[in-house]
Image 1 (cartoon, rainbow, N blue to C red):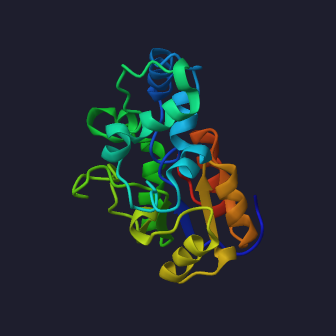
Image 2: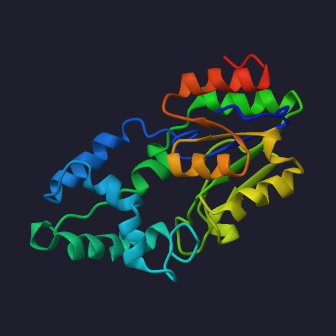
Length: 226
């Protein structure tokens, strides 16, 4: 959505904007079937609010108090057992986070990644604002497997202990980039995150198709990107 102002900064989400879920959906469906659950269960439950509520306020993946290893090591299956009971085939091991975040499974949208470089070189301030997680208990494993060279700021929920759609998380980016809300265009793939940004006065691009989103970004910045 266009609000107002000259754009001086571009802020990117990671998952679904820079990180591609291409091919992962079928793996998530296969996990669901192996567990005896509906096709969309593993994906929706792994990122859903019900799981967060079950974990409680002191146990959070995105706020940095839990890791992917913690969840895939038993907590996720405990939650599914709690919700689905005897319907669940709990003899199966599933790793829904590992499937898109680790090693050879990682897929980056190269065209979107290229826009960061182009815009940064053109003088735009660039940032990543992501609800991110620690993968391993030692916090040593790479959490953002993409080129960060052209980002002025990388703001991660697991380090800041706040997350989208909390307004304070967005305002942290404003402060670190030194820009006003109307000078920002923000790309995200979740409606609640987009709505929170718009309430603060940010310009937004709801990412449902990468190439279309890049075209919208060209209009905001007046820069040829593809």
